[in-house]
Length: 179
Image (cartoon, rainbow, N blue to C red; front, side, top):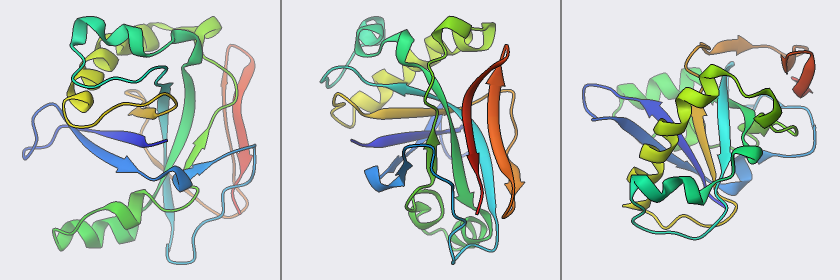
């Protein structure tokens, strides 16, 4: 499994910037997130997570909907070692160490489909465009994850002892502790 993280466009990129994260970046099973020793502090960003359901390469946007199932959309938190990221950016170095460390992504256990909102529906064309873009460079495999930062949420700093959760219409989709 590969995790693809999308970043909003910058002056240097058109559309979306993409980072690939290793499978070790995924924290599974409602375990707590441990702030890494090398990070002074971490920022958490809410993302919409979509799982790829079939193998594909060079997928045209009009066929992209065949490569995911809306019933498997969920939420995730992506953690960034912010001071390290700032240093890496200043040095024009790769961001991998600051964004793809072990357990940097906490995936929700409940699907979003029954709770689909206008925000999620508005992301579907974006998902199709991202799949087209990614698959022109990488082969997508069943089980790969695409993380799309939630457009209405801003990253927030987390501290030891915090409890992060995400609920929608009274249903908890994600809940874990920071240690």
